[in-house]
Amino acid sequence: MAILNIRKIGDPVLRSKAKEVEEVTDKTRDLLDNMAETMYDAPGIGLAAPQVGILQRVIVVDVEDDNGLLELINPEIISVSEEKAIMEEGCLSIPEEKGHVVRAKKVTVRGLNRNGKEVIIEAEDLLARALQHEIDHLDGVLFVDKLVKVID
Ligand code: GNR
Ligand code: NI
Image (cartoon, rainbow, N blue to C red):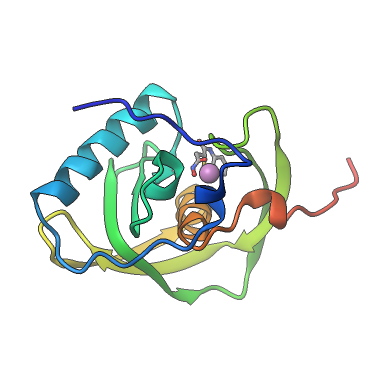
């Protein structure tokens, strides 16, 4: 395993669209392992492959709930709640910056696990937040694109 270099804002890879993984292979599983190690080392609650310079649709998330480490390949949001939530976000690729973002409170995500098997994740609150944040990274979208003003 290896800790990968996390790309920072200004690096064009963070603004590029990641490609679908056509076949889940040992290389995909190596990437997942290295991404998880990098996320835990950072530490962070999620990481998307473009953040380590790899334009593939691969994410890892661990919000320290019962799901433990979630590894998703080609993740897609297949439904979102009408109910929204506002939360302060940060991003390992944008150190020092934090800001409030409005997102769906609940999402359903479909993707492939490390064995290439389809999985469906029903998520709310912090897990839903992290999944939406990571899936945005796959499309070159960063939380700073979505900031809202709050009156504190
Ligand atoms: O570690 C992270 N924390 C976080 C907090 C609120 C909303 C989203 C996140 S994701 C972030 C790690 C990261 O940058 N993933 O892309
Ligand atoms: Ni991020």
